[in-house]
Amino acid sequence: MPKAKLDLKSLSDQDLKEKLSEESLRLKKVAFSHAVTPIENPMSIRFMRREIARIQTEIRRRELGF
Image (cartoon, rainbow, N blue to C red):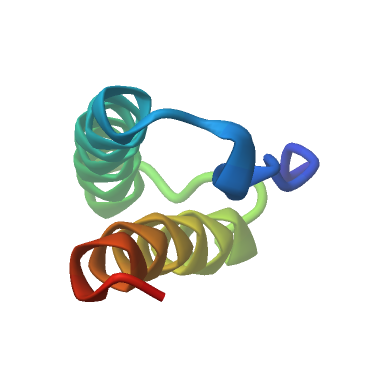
């Protein structure tokens, strides 16, 4: 079951970067685990990728000053 979405706008820039690295590492571990032994809910990989994209989008939005 995917976790509820975080309010990314309330996090600091440093917190966003830390969250991005944590989520990326978690995705790599789950993807590797899924390649070895299929996981119960493969859709969770899609949710993780989307959450990473949301974090990257927020970081980029702040870089552009929006």
